[in-house]
Length: 278
Image (cartoon, one colour):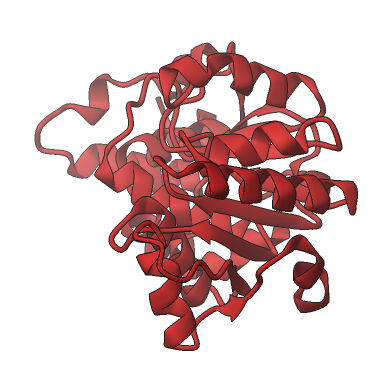
């Protein structure tokens, strides 16, 4: 297909499916997404890209979710903070105006296998944040993140950022929770087209997306080298306020203790302490 016949949306969806944003960022400063896609097809010695049909593939993918691009009015302005790794587009289910949903978003995250105390804290923080009119964002993962979504739902919309295509939940048995989020005024967002499965690379990129969509991060409980700590590190890199719940002596909060000791996070023992810091 000639580049001129390819829409910006279809071209960006095709590029996003096969390249990371930084791999095409320089070209996109000089050429249209359609031209960049055509250039990549011509350079592909494997012939793999020439067999793809970007328009048909986008149309099929948008049967289950829509593909948002930077020129859309609903595009969240905060994503500009990602610089050359700003997404080529976002797959979205649920709320029609993502820019409105992310105007005042707070991430509540933590361990995937937390103790009862951490779950109680996650529910308390998420409930209070939602009651105050903020959007609670998390990853839909087991443990703290799922508890945050569940506590926020009765009080307002919540945002889920998934490390896979939005045709399925991650983890799979959180499909009912995902449906509740997208049908009750919230949204699910992903960098990846339907059919994409989760991997180490998608988890890392999704942590940065989650933080970029938010104004601050509340870390309930994090082990060292965990996905929750990766999200906290993304908050530091993107200069988002990072609030960590102190949990002295807990074997599951080594990440929190480290961040607080290094002065990289602000201590936040209760939800009442969060709002002045935010």
